[in-house]
Length: 129
Length: 298
Length: 134
Image 1 (cartoon, each protein chain N blue to C red):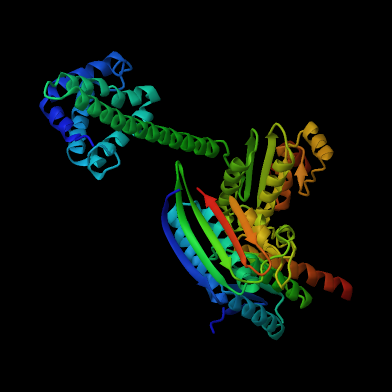
Image 2: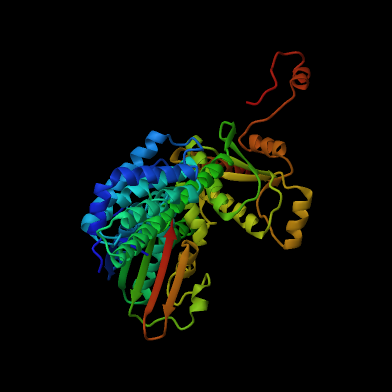
C-alpha cells in the first residue's frame, strides 16, 4: 500500500499531502506520524495541504487526531496552505479544527514552530537559573 | 389535415408583396423609431426569416417543433437574444413574428384557387404556427434578460467588495450595505483569495458601512473569520456601531472574535501583532534628542 | 427539467469514496459550477458516500447535470438498501452518530447543498438527494 512520505526537517517533521487521500491512507499517515514523532523526538509537525482540493470530515478528523496525539507527545502541529474554497467548505460543514494551529505556508508554519520552541527553551532556562 | 405546403408555395410566389406589407406593419408599430436597427437591417432580417419559414412550411408541416423549422427557430432565437440585449421591449420583439400574420392571411384570402373552407383551415394552421413561434421568441427574450440580470448582479457584488492592502501582510475589507448570503459568499471568497495572493497574516473586516447586523449576518462574519483562521490568517472586526452592538446583545448574538471600535484601532493592533509600531515623528525625534530618526512604521 | 448528462457509480469499498469525489468533480465542471460550489458539492458527496458505506452497506450514486431556464445544476442521488434510519430528524442534527464518525455527514451535506431531501424507513434503505445550482 502507498504511504505518504514524512520528511525530517531539523527538529520538525514535514508532510506534504499531494494525492486525493482515501481513508486507509489517512489512517496510515496518522500511525506513521505518531511513530516518527517518537522516533525522532520531533517538536513540531508541519502538514502541507496546499495541494488538497477537498477536506471532508474524515480527513478533518485525521488532522484533529494528529494534533491531539502530537500535543501529548510534546510536539506542535501546524496545518499549512489550506485553500480558500476548502476552508469555506470546512466551516460550512461544521468543522473548525479548533485544536489545530494553522499557517499560510510552510515557511510561516516553520517560523511558528521555531518561535514556540524558543519561548519554551527560554522558559526552561529561567527555571534552571 | 391541411397541407401547409400550399402556403409555402404561396409565400414563394407572393414573397415581394408579403415582405413589403410585413415591413410596413412593423414600421407602423414603431420598430424603427427607436433607431436601434436600420431599415436595411430590418428588410434583410425579414426576408431571411421569410425564406427560412417557407422552407419549414414546405418540409415540416404545421408542427413548429419539426426539425425543418430548425433554421427559422435558430434565427428567431438569435434575433430575440440580440434585441433583448439592445433594450427592445418584449412587445417590440414579439411584434416581429406576430405582424407576419396579416400579410400571410391576405395572401391566403386573395388566392382564388382556394375554397373558403380550405382558406379557413390554412389560416388557422398559420395562426397556430405563428403563435408557437411567437411564444418561443418571448421565451428566448425572457431568458436573455434574465442572463443580463444575473451578470449584472454578479458584477455589482464583485465591485462592492474591494479588498485593500493596508500594509505588508495586512488587508482590510470595508463592507458597505446589507450583507445577504449571496453577497457574503462573494465577499468571503474575495477576501480569502486575496489573503492567499498577498500572503496576508491579518485581515481587518470593517463594518462601519453595514446598516444592521442580524443573526444571519453575524453568522456569516463568524464563518469568514473561522475560514480565514483555517488558512492561517487572523481577522479583526472593526467599526461595530453603538446601536449595532446593542442590537446584537439584545438578539443574543455573540461575536467571539477580536473586535475594535474603529478601523484605525484595528490597524494599530494589526501593526503591533506583526511586530511594528507607529510613533510620532516629533516625539520620536525629541526622545532621541534630535537624532534624525523618522517616525514611521517599520 | 432536461438532463444534460448522467453518470453512475457503485459504492462498495472505501476506494469508491475517492471515485465518487472524482465523478462529482467531473460533473461539477460539466455543470460549470464555481470553485467554491464545486468544492462544497464534492465534499458533500464524499460525506454521503462514506455514510452509505459505513451505515448502508454501500449502494449506488447517480449524478445528473440538469438545466432549468436560466440556470444549471448538479444533482446527486445516493441510494442504499441498508437498515435505514429510524429517526431522520435526529440524524440530521450535528453530532448524531450511531457509528464511529463525527456525526457531521448528513447535516453537513445538507448545509453544503442548495437542495436536500432524504427518504428513509427502517428496513427499506435510505435515499438522499442533493443538488447545487450555478
